[in-house]
Length: 550
Image 1 (tube, rainbow, N blue to C red):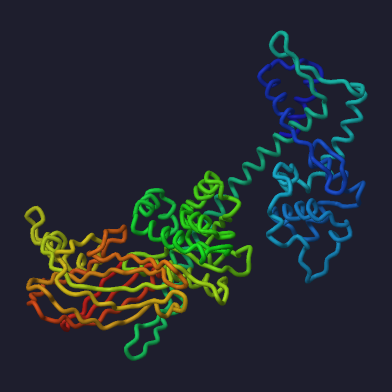
Image 2: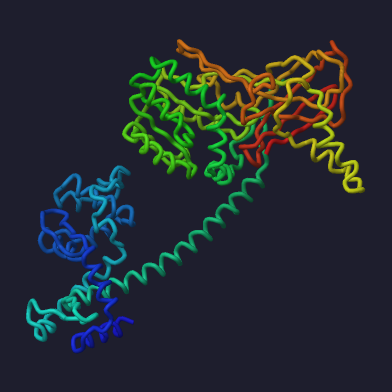
């Protein structure tokens, strides 16, 4: 392929170009060329290759040797360029290395470009291997070309009548070489990507199989829920992908109970946020981060793994708040904040039945790693409650339905359906008992072990009827250090939220009279196969019922 291209170049020296469109394309390409600055002086060159040659001859710095000595990949090469551009070190610093030392540009801060348009940052370091050979070839060709075309002469190409573009033989040769490299790099990148995707899928499958094959190490004590071992399997990709869809963020923003409670807490307590450094865990569209800035925060670090964070960046820019909010894409447990400690952590981490999705785990991780000793997490308190309902319509919709499905009995489906906890807006008129708080959580002090629990409950029936289900809901409190305390509830007696209520249907309706007391025990624990889902076990009237929230 290379020899064919050089033959084509020789032909061009004897004959005029005959493709006007190509001439225009070449002219545009030349117009877009950005000069490349030397790494060590003010000299400018037409290409990175020329800079590398200049650095070797004028500054005794061989870029190829440096990459080999420090064993640099493409990211290491980019960090080195930005390090040299920003720190302007002596060449001796770049050559000093022992077996245990790391390069002085090892920090991720040097991934930030000094000049975003720097052609050296767009250079494929794999091409460095061929610089010497190509330069030697170009040098030899140049001598012969100068004999044929005196210095300053050009190849000419006639396009449409009245138009002419010119280029030197060296420029033509460089252009052909660049096209050849681009084709080869594109092909190699596509092959590498396919191999990487295949390898990643194989690794995930092997890891999944390995983890699921391990026995669960369960330790239990009297009256306590079983604790899951650290070998639980995480399948976070679907979780974070779900929050990449705009509809879920629209639903949360339109939930006025949720969003306005956070807003009223922050706007109503400016003394809490004044000049504070804030961490927003799971920032989504960045609405809480913007509330915090408006409440007086000095700076907010907003973290989210989902793709929605890119829209959050645009939203902050649109509202001229991008200088006050730093967005960081990644799983909070894997990233590193630019600051050691923060004053406040805010997060809307609540899921169905409060603990579904396990996002509170990340908040507690952030609290342990980044929160100052006198800092606070908001919301700072919450609780979970249950109550009994009598709703035969809901029961018939999910359970009795299977007695006759287009003339066929499918009663075997009942036990499967009942075991799946559902999320519904429950009519407050269908609640037939008082509510019982089964779990209080102080977010500023609790541990991961508090998020799996067993609690006894006692529900006094206040109206005669058939109890068809238990329901769960939660209350949220913004209390600590607040002059204006804010709280909201997801109970059936309050304005409906996007969390609704969690419904645990009974196998069969339970006849009750006013004044009866339902005694039982509820256990909440994570599903070992999917730690973002929950398994709820209820013992009621000597019946043991297990529900899954997935």
